[in-house]
Image (cartoon, rainbow, N blue to C red; front, side, top):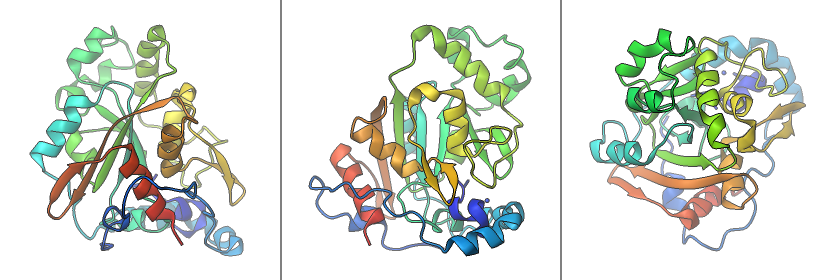
Length: 280
């Protein structure tokens, strides 16, 4: 999600912070359930006062970038991610080089979904669907992901989605095989929907990143909570729910990037990184 707090009134879903939470996580394994605790770290009055300016402030902050993600143009890391990701997988990303990913605590700040390439869409029988046809050229050019950010809902390439420091890929396990084609068509049908700068999951006339995924695939069971009087979906809480069996999502891979390179973390490492990100 570009920027929770800005969307709630301090700024809009996409300064280097060193060291990264991956380095501070310590030994993985012994992790308490503190992920996403106390997300309201700004005074509610301030949030309400600044709420009317959320669209303008959100767009400004979304464009403030200190550096590319550590996985940017890392051919090996991107190849690994593309080898394991499948249509309708949920993708969580975090990039501490972006201002918008540093406003609130957390390892992840944005959510995207995989649609697939031409071959995959043909296999699902949706390549000729009226909702897909206008986007064929984009898909052929590599734009096989969908996301919602300050520009609204749009297709994106792997190099755009993976220009980040860390990536988690989660696979929904509650989708019936016969429903998958319809979900893909529904995602394509939402291209062009406006971005929800106020991050209100109860209003589907405009959609923030995680809200888009929840709107199309409620079967994924993304956890919701009330924050600053709005129904929210936090990327870190999605990861935590998957790890703890509270959402029908399977961990496919967790890739962590640093200046030295990239590694694949297991479920214990992901738990530890979430814990570190939310530690006081």
